[in-house]
Length: 110
Length: 113
Image 1 (cartoon, rainbow over the protein chains, first blue to last red):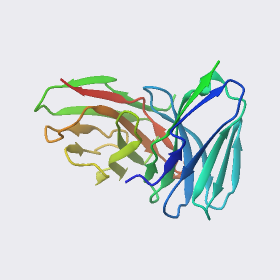
Image 2: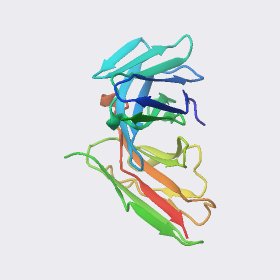
Image 3: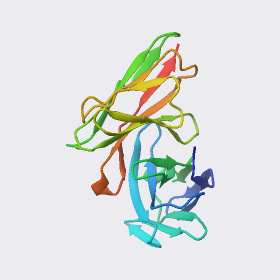
């Protein structure tokens, strides 16, 4: 069963703009992860945030986590055409198992 | 370079046929996973294995089988009992030391003909 849900389902932005997507989940977690998938490819791990962390940065990515609201957001700043992809959040079901949401499809227009 | 390799990239299956998808990793990861992805949807877990010679069913294991005889290899067999096998199949591996971040293969697209 899928625990995480991303919002919006799809997002279209102009190059240089910021893109924000959200993830909500149902049960308590140890960590939450974000992945990117280019069309027809495997997923690439972007960032992991632990339940005791509130914000994390990696390059142009900023992730926040609000455990009281059971939600997370991924912000991509100064978007580029290469950021066009689907983005998935994943929450840990147990020590080894992750549950993935349905993803947000981001299109960056030149 | 370390990584995870799935083969073949494309696979065609006739009705009633079993097919096996290969997944090999040289990352020395303990855990391996198989996910199924349907168009426009998220990933659904088929099977996972935490150690050699042990594996557990995921959310949609019916019609699939796996083996884990070597740490590096986790092949998935799609049996004739799987009624709707057309999908994109993704293999992944993980290591506790990495905080459970998964490394994914590039996927196998299976089509029933």
